[in-house]
Image (cartoon, rainbow, N blue to C red; front, side, top):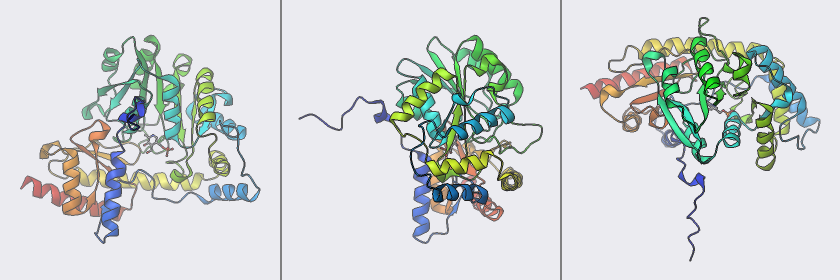
Length: 395
Ligand SMILES: Cc1ncc(COP(=O)(O)O)c(C=O)c1O
């Protein structure tokens, strides 16, 4: 009898998300009555701004409940193109944009539209854990390049140069970064862009945390804005989830060269179809700037929390970290304790009821990720628990 579970499909080798596993375990323990302190959140702890909700509610009341084009509402795509031009200095027409159910899906569609068996995709580590799995799902090969804390976790251009082969199709960049919180300097992006153009590779730039930057000397820069030559090789992904506290709405978007956009739209038309119609009306209100006050408030709160968590964690003996410049994560090097990140996090959860993300699945064994998308009180509580735990480990 044939084995129905046996398959040569690329999806079979995928690893389930490690972040979801520990988050689920922490929730289960909390439900049983444990006093859990969680630093796992991959989403803002704010509500979606009211003007965005109002636009969505109005759309529902107006009967905006049918399909839109697979690529999204033309008016929303026009706003996306305007946003890319005005805020990121990325030239392109609205026909080059695609709206999708989440930036995660935008990254996925770009990867599968570009890569297949025989192709190599370069991913600087630490990385967002979904990138390698998406590359594997496309049947392509992951080529990891380790970056260093002392270089602010930026990809070293010389390392990129060395890693490129005849088969290299794509480089995935993420700035500001999940999990390191690093923001790339313009000078580094210029060097990377020069290499990408000369060696003729594509770049996917995931800029979902773009607005969450906290240092005036480190503004966010989009690699696609640096020259027309790099623009025609770049897919820029962004979304509503993090900036507007809209993770559950599932709205992402990208801009790419037209030839690639056509493929992506074809794929979306046969897979998800459009992002939820009335949610797209909420996205229009967001991109029209109707929630600027709320967004400014969120950024100010994250900046304050960043300062707090960094100052407190830096004092813990045996833990090393860089000062994050963006997103809402702090990556802690815990290698001095001699434990694997998963064992460290499991023991931390068991003994101190503190949930943190082990970063082996982010290409960063020996580190853990703390999210500061939570109250200052929660941050202080977490740091106290971590401090006690580290003291006990050091004996
Ligand atoms: C780096 C990065 N890119 C993309 C996403 C996906 O965002 P979305 O909620 O829009 O799918 C996330 C979410 O955690 C992320 O951290």
